[in-house]
Amino acid sequence: MQYRKCAEHSLLSRTVVHRIASLMARAQRGQTMAEYALAMPILAALLVGLALAGFYAFRAASADWGVFITGVAEGSYQTPATAQVRSSIIWPDIRSRIAAGQSAPRQVRSQIFIEDSRPWILSINLIEAHRGSTFFRLWRFYPGPPPPGGPE
Image (tube, rainbow, N blue to C red; front, side, top):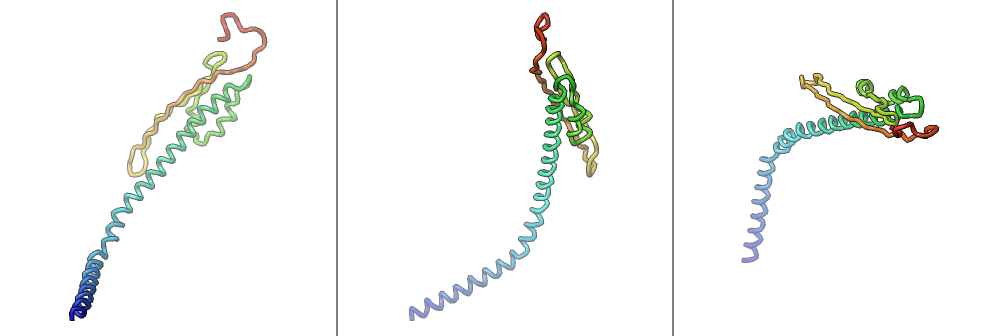
C-alpha cells in the first residue's frame, strides 16, 4: 500500500510540474521577441559607432602618414619630391592642408592643420579637428668645411 501511494504521488507530482512548466512557457512565449526588439537598436548603434570610429582612425592615420612622407620628400637631396608624394595621400582635403618646407639650412618642418565643420546625416554637425607637425634633421654630406659660425 505504501509503495502504491508513493508511485501515485510521484506520478501526480510529475503531472503538476509538467502543467506548471507548460503554463510558464506560454506566459514567456512573447518575451524573446520583446528582448530582441530592445537589444537590436543598441547593437545597431554599436556597429555604426564602430564603423565611424574606424573611418576616423583611417583618416587620422592618413593625415599622419601625409605629414611624415611629405616631410621626408621635402628633405630629399637637392630636388624635393613632394609632388610625387602628395598623390599618395588619399583625400584631397588632407592633401591640400599639408605644408612642408625647410625651416633651417639642414632642417625640414612638415605640418597639417584641419578644423572643419560640416552638416552630416540627420542635421548632425560633424566636426573634424586634426593637428600635427614634425621636424626632420637632414643628415647630408656637404662638400667642404662647415660655414663660419657652425653648420646651422
